[in-house]
Image (cartoon, rainbow, N blue to C red; front, side, top):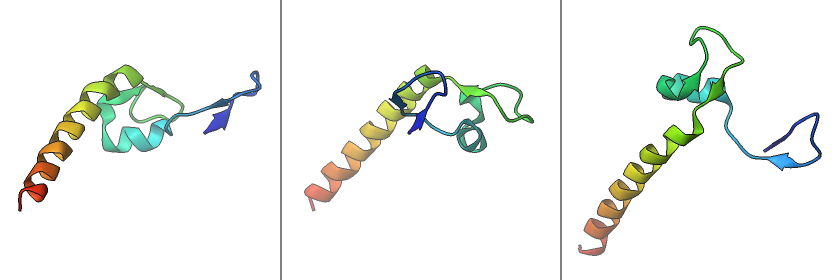
Length: 64
């Protein structure tokens, strides 16, 4: 979580440079420079795919 200097409310997000090191396609800026942002809308398909994978793993474990 973080607070914008101009706003008086809490926001939630990721540290762009940490995400860039794992999934560079989500980083909005030159890869060799800090200070870029993230394409948050591109997280959705990745998260859905991971949930699908986890549901399959749970189903296998529950059927043992």
